[in-house]
Every structure is written in C-alpha cells, then in structure tokens.
Image (tube, rainbow, N blue to C red; front, top):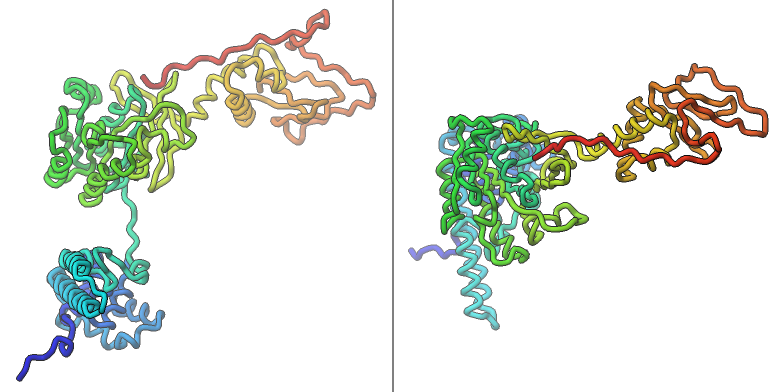
Length: 529
C-alpha cells in the first residue's frame, strides 16, 4: 500500500492535549495566566477550542467555571458553535490534570509550530513554481521564517511571517489586564527603568543611597511606601570611604539586604549586571552614574543611546527588578522638563520615570515625569545635615511664598492699610510670587481686603488684627466681614470724603507724597545642603 500523500494527511495536532489544557483552567483558574503566556487562541487546532480559550481570556480576573463559561459563550452567540454546554462539561472529564498543564501546553504549542512550518513549506513551494521565482530570495525568506517558528517567535499566529509576531486583535483585546505594581508607590514601577538626573553637586548620589537603604529596609522613601527586598547599589564614581561614611551616617547596621560595589565597572559590565540580577534576584538595582556602566561614543546620537539602554530595559522587564540610573542634566533652561536631560532625547524616551533634581540658591527641588502614575510637581527637599538624609517638603510654589508672605505682613504691620501696587513696590521678589502670596494671605484670613477693586475704590489690604478707618461714603466690601455687619450709609454729597488713618504715612503734613521704603522678604534657612 503506497504511503499517504502529505496533502491527504491532517495537519499536526493533539486534541487530547488541547482539551487537557482547557480543562485544567476550569479546575484551577490560576492556570490561565501560565497558559496565556505561552499560547494564543490560534495555537489550538480545533475551532471550538479556540472559541473556548478566547472566552476564558475574556473572563480573566473573574471566576471561570462551567456556568460562567457557558454564559460568556452564549452572550456572544458562540455556545452552539462550540458544541454546547454538553461539550464544555466534557473538558473536565478524565483528561484534565492541573499538575500536567505545563507539559500539555508545550504539546499544543509544538503542534501549532509544526502546522506553521507545514504552511510555510506549502507557501514556499507555491512561490517556487512561479515563473519569476528568485532562488536566493526564497531561500533567505524560508530560512528566516522557519528559524522564527522554531525559536517560538512566530508561534502565536498563523499570520506570523519572517520573525514578526502578529496577534489577532480579538486575542489582544481578550488578554488579561495587568495591574502596574511599584517598588516605590506611584513612582518606580516593578520591572521598570528610571533616570535620576541632576546638575553636578545637586545631591543625586545622596538621594540614590537614601532610596537604596529605604527599599532594603522596607521603609518609606520621601514619604512613599516601598516594597522591601534585596538591593544592588553600583557606586562607579564616588570614593569607597564616602559611600561607607554616608551609609553609617544614615544609621545602616549592615544587616540590611543591600549589596554594594564601590569601584570602577568591569570590562563586560552589562553581562555582569545580568549575572548579578539572576543570582541575587534584587527588587532594585541602582547604577551611579549611568555612563560609567553604559559606554556610548556620542551621547547625542539617538540610535546609539537607545541601543545602549535596550539591554537594561530588557533586563528590568525579564527579571522584574527596577533599574534606576543616575545621570546629569544639561546646561541652561528648557521649555520641556524632559529636554533638560543631558544628551539625546533617547535618555528620556527610554525610561518609565524621570526624576529631575535641581538646586537653586536656597534649596533643592525634585520633580518627576511618569509613564505610570501621576507626575510629581516641583517639591522642595529638606536635608538633614547630621544624618545626611532627605525628606520631601512642600511644593516649590508654596515655599517660594513663605519669605514673601512674611515681608507682606511686615509691610502691612508697619505701614497700615495699603493698596496692591503699594505692596508690590514695597516688597521685593518676583511679581507673580508676590501676588500669589498676597492672595494666599487673604484666603488664609491673615490679611483683610476691602474696596471694590475699581479706580475710584481700589482694593486695600491690612492685617487681620488691624482696625480699618473707613469714611461714610465707602461702598466697598470686606472679605472677612459677615453679612450681618452694619452697612455704611452712602455719601450723598458730590465732594468725596478723604480717607484718614492713624498709621497712614502716604502723605506728609506738607501734602507731598512720600515713597514707601522697600521691605526685603525675611530670609529662610537653606533647606538642603
């Protein structure tokens, strides 16, 4: 009897393995995540099984049993096409074994790969018979596609071709939603890559070591909760004694799960970092600074920088460790904060979180730009010079107002009731900060505002504990007065009544106007050293 021709034989498949996989998910819903990482619906040979698996993916995160699965298929009009509730119930009859699901999944995947190779062979054979077939092009295409299938890169869909892994939209939409987890809540995602960038001497390494110790101890970092776990800190630039002294000052005991390398990076640094990550399984790896580990000839070359950072990004995704790299900010001010990072924009584009640390005359400021979570507005860092630890203070806008607010109160206490232009002239500082500080003082009840805000009756400001001397003709309102307060009688005369004040010094006895002497804002101590 002659052997059956290839076209007469059914494509490779194993229906028992497919039923066993689906049955295992029904018995233990936790198996869905494991299976979904290795299989797509197109990997199942039987159309009925593809429909069932898609329905299971749609139910991810919810109970998956005979009742919910049948209901899901029925609501989408696919129950009858799968063989009905009777066939669904047979998936758990005898074949399903949760302990063997990984082996059964491998069988299904390999059979799917064989079908793709067979399909690829048929396609190459068809094109080889064409009149203008190119031998070298077909050979290269077949080699690339077959290699992709064999390596598993093209196993997820029959639409895979030449190494691309195309997934049907239905499968993509049905995949379980993955919740983002953080090692520092809302800031540093698990398996992510971040950049801590700042000017020289801004305190980048200090902040990085504070982070390392906080995560190793499971203590809050700048007030944000952390996930406790092993930490690797690569100090590739600072002196070993400086690193040791800082950890001592912060109160480290040596019992923390924190591994430190304080020396130059080895020649083959990236493979060495991967080896460390696989051996110690850290939750956080800090590289300080980045360019002492990753070597680039031109930091402004987008393609070169992206290629250099790719291994770190892959390492973070594969191991689940968060990798934080210390880097520098460029010179000058930029309109977009991300553009202030030194070098190519690829540094900013590659990371999940960019922490930007700047230093101005009186304090240091930290902000963040997040791919996951909300951005952090500019906050002042309070530095403890004794222990050399850092705490998160108030927003920069509020802190900027503090000395200006004190100066405004001092001005009003010494001069009495003043208009806004008079206050703006008397108090030093940026106009926008002075205006914001004045509004905040009014809202906080420390300053009372009167007047209508018109040219004939401008707003006037005084401290809350001062007394107003108002003329009978005034129709202005005071923000702090209640509605039950007696209203002044209107002035029926055409001649305005002048305003007098016991503390006013705007006019001298001779009638000449006096210019107020500018009052400097009270100084505050340096918040970060």
